Length: 277
Image (tube, rainbow, N blue to C red; front, side, top):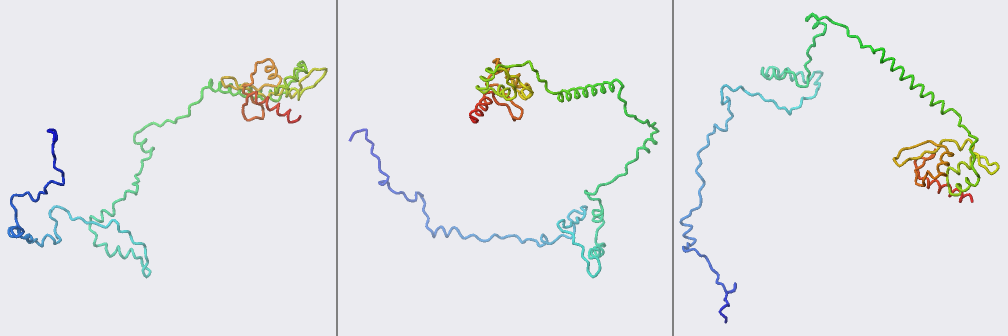
């Protein structure tokens, strides 16, 4: 074997060691020296500790009288025509101590103590104060006149607006469109041109709009999301034919709940034509 090899014992070859104590005692020796324990010799407990004290430990301490707080009051019962509660109170009225009576007769927390409030007239008489009648401050005449002017102006504005609404729509006779121009825009689906073609008169190759084409029923939104209008179909057609309106412009017509792009209105008009064809 080489010098570098170290031989080790296996676990199985190890000897089992027993009790490693130097002195060994038998069971008989242990029983001789150690006897079983005896019950302790207790001192006799005086009986006075278990007797209820008739007097308090401290002579100055008052006698505490306790009542059962959980005890519910008995309901009113009549025994042979008599009140049952009155008989109990009369029987035990003499047994109550003065301290208990004071506690029972004291006001409860729920009962509000009402104190008489002295009248103001008596206080003024006692202090000899001179009473002065305070009148309501009057509105200055200048401010009142300004208020009247503002109301008059607002009433005039409302009257003017109501008169404008009642005025009939003007029918200008000077506007004329060529039939070819209206036809090309109608074929492309321009809703304003379609409205003019429906509400116009054709004469000598010219289209003349009538009353319905001048009704202000159109509105649009600018890039800043501001609403403009209402405008007539003639005005909107002039702007669209000149190239001022794009197909993405949000437009709304009277009777519609929201704004839609001009392109959607064009698709609607085209679908109408295809349906009738």
